Length: 249
Length: 289
Image 1 (cartoon, chains in turn brown, orange):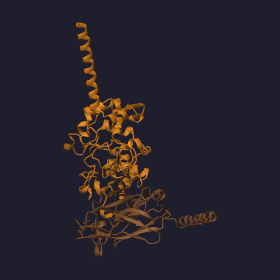
Image 2 (cartoon, each protein chain N blue to C red):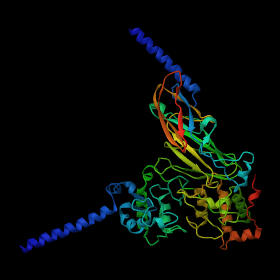
Image 3 (tube, rainbow over the protein chains, first blue to last red):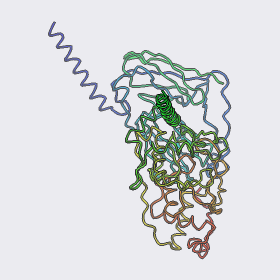
Image 4 (cartoon, each protein chain N blue to C red):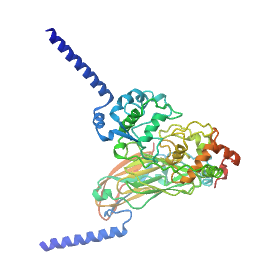
């Protein structure tokens, strides 16, 4: 009896050592040891709202970047079959200890290109560094506007052509509206969350990775339609499934 | 018997006076404020002066509350008639700072703003206050936002000694004005008529005008060359004016100050030099496409 316990302990130890070595070696985005994941699709039911075209004629440089492909608003980007892009998925309940506090080390980019934000929605973890870059030959100002009292403090910096990246981070979870005062149509988001996150692609698909088996509340955030939540149980091995549907206004 | 009545009435009068002063105190400060007033954070430091928030409550209530409001959120009873809106002290975002964008101003910044007032707004220069009263008010203003308890003011922007103005520097300043595209808002001649000028909004979503150099009004945050230098290095938080500190080097900043002076109507060395050079305004179409 005693030996079987010892053996079990040894096996567990080895497994843990292997796992932790593995996560150090693989070790980028996901530092938590979780191997489970949640995957799904986000769709819109009803008629997708019309996204207005953007008149950039006040800045000929900007207008010149969209001669073949006119720019449109990006508040609700809907693909074929109602798939919604740029929906942020994150865990609002169920994460514990290290899994909740692990911060990814990569620095995602928020680029100004053709006088639009790429991506339109940037997701970062609390404390995760990100870069604001410019690919444009026109001056922008980057003006994030966190809600007063949110724990985040707004700022306003210029980026003329060729400016170096601005490297920054946010202190508290919150969707932060970002704008450029020089080009009033430019509007994007820094969505700050705690723990693992994902964002839907053009087909409305997402995968939340790095989750230890357990029960979670998954939240989906869309800038026009707000948030929705679902309870999901993640088991080891197979990905759990959670589809979301927003209703067109 | 008569003596007793006298003692009783005296005692009653004393109670009434005490009660009255207590109630005035209660009107001015809440319990929470009272507690905070006894902490070391309830002071300001400007040079050798120490301001005490507890001494400013009555001054604030008499002179400031009508616009800035009893809880400092900029919603005083006259605020609806005021444009630009009175400062909301609860968010602790201030235009006139010596510190980087997104940081708290120094006590001295607030002290100077109170005395200077803010041109083209309803805020007059409060130079009728003594220095001590202003220092006390600075300490009082800081109690409206919790940011002052968790954050320190940013490190002040260093302003190097002002160099001698030369024709080359004025010309170089024009190049900076073109490169970082000040003209997008301020216009190629500084007339506040750039292509983006008409759509500018402050952080509250209200229309706001860029500064018109050609009109030559006083700058909101001070009239010296050093003050002007600071404006584009710190930005005016709460407005569309961003910080250029990552993109304008200190020596270029002085060039820009000289060029901006040449756009103002008052006679100056800068204006004279620009005229001699025959400087033409920025050509917006000449910028890289």
